[in-house]
Structure formats: C-alpha cells, structure tokens
Amino acid sequence: MAKNKLNKNWIHDHINDPYVKLAQKEGYRARAAFKLKEIDEEEKLIKPGQVIVDLGCTPGSWGQYARRKLAGKEGGGINGTLIGLDMLPMEPIADFHFIQGDFREPEVIQQLENLVQGQKVDLVLSDMAPNLSGIHDSDAARMEHLIDLAIEFSQAHLKPGGALLVKCFKDMGFNDIVLKFRAEFKTVVQKKPKASRDKSSEIFLLGRGLKNPTDGMASAQPLESDGWHP
Ligand SMILES: C[S@@+](CC[C@H](N)C(=O)[O-])C[C@H]1O[C@@H](n2cnc3c(N)ncnc32)[C@H](O)[C@@H]1O
Image (cartoon, rainbow, N blue to C red; front, side, top):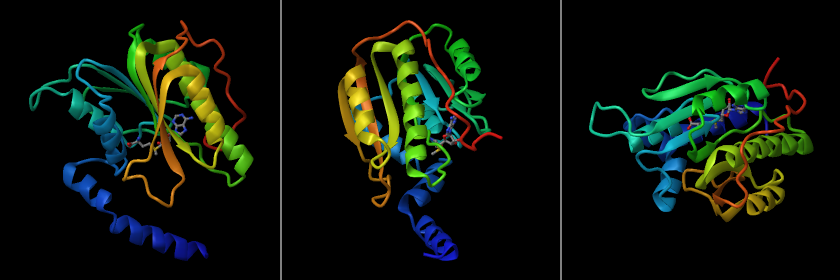
C-alpha cells in the first residue's frame, strides 16, 4: 500500500479510536494508559505504598495512571515512589522522578539505581520498543535485548514477590522471551488488553515472583547502535 494511503488510514483509525477519545476525556497523554489500566484491574498490580519503575515512560500515560492509583485525596501527594526513564524528554508529572536516557547504557542504569536508593521495587513496567528498522532479525534482537535488560534489572531490584510487565511482539522472538520469563518468574501470564489493537502483534508478558533474585546488575552491555541515538 502507498505510504500516503497508509498515513490516511492511520489518521482515520486514530481519530475514530474510542481509546483516543477516552484518553482525551480522562486527561491521559496517550491511549496506552488503558492497556495498563485493564491489566492492572485484572491482575491487581498497583497498590498504595509501592515502588514502581516505568521503563520507556514517555509521553507519560502509564505514569499518570500509576500516579492516580498511588494518590491519596485530591490535591495530596502520593503514597509510594514512581520512577520513570525514557530516551525522549517527558512533560513533568507531579511526584514522578524522571530520568532521560537510554536504558541500554550502563551509566543510565546506574542513574536509575541511584534513584532507587536501595529500595526494593514492587513493580517494573516496560513499554519500550526499539525504533524498527524493518530488518526482522535485527529488530527482534533489539527487542529481546531491551527485555533482557528489564529482566536483569528486575532480578536485581524487585522484591521477591514483585512483578515485571513488559511489552513484546508475537513476531519478535516472543517464544524465547516467554522461556526466559518462565526461567525467572514463578508465574507468567500473557495479556492482550482491549486497547491493544487487534491488528498489532503487541502482547504483554507479566511475570510475578522471582525464582532467583540477585543483588545487583553485573553485565548490562549495550547492543550495537540501532539508530535511536546518533
Ligand atoms: C510506546 S512508548 C511508551 C508509552 C508510555 N508507556 C505511555 O503510556 O505514555 C515507548 C517508549 O519507549 C522508549 N524507549 C525505547 N527504547 C528505549 C531505550 N533503549 N531506553 C529508554 N527508552 C526507550 C521510547 O522513547 C518511547 O517513548
């Protein structure tokens, strides 16, 4: 299909998307908020008092949703800690500690660890996806690398009963990723929330309860540059 036609179809779908309308109505920065909301409502992930790390958090709709769940009465602060990271800038969210940087870079992970300050984390969220090159094997390897790093971070920082929720794509190394989740977590479930478009191979994996928690991240090595960064 020609590029112009594809763009027109995307704009048509976007304007008529009920979740886009709902996001505008409820003050969310992106329709993605409703993916996390549905998974959270089914799985009871987010509770007051928790420490939550949101990887790939820009523009911030998951952060907004999590903040609302941790907030007390109208106008008050939050009961809990929210830390997010993205290579792109993000408009501030109250009580949300934001780091701008690439999660594949060890010094960025170090900044994140400094913010966590030795607290054990209840929930790690990752909605990260690499900038797609169109070369399937290389895109799948980048996706897997991001997820490997999220698993490694979780092993080091999650509470034993904590959870990791990551975005995956069914056509990008998904079976391998499921095996890695099963090796690391006591329970693993796949989630396809309604707000995740049917025609997208996007799917979320939720792992709960670390089998072998470790004390720190030993080997965060960057993959070759993938064009996200100059
Ligand atoms: C789908 S968006 C996240 C949307 C977000 N969950 C929300 O609700 O607003 C994916 C984000 O992952 C970020 N990302 C991708 N690779 C990354 C990396 N290596 N390090 C940090 N952020 C990354 C992108 O910059 C992008 O903002």
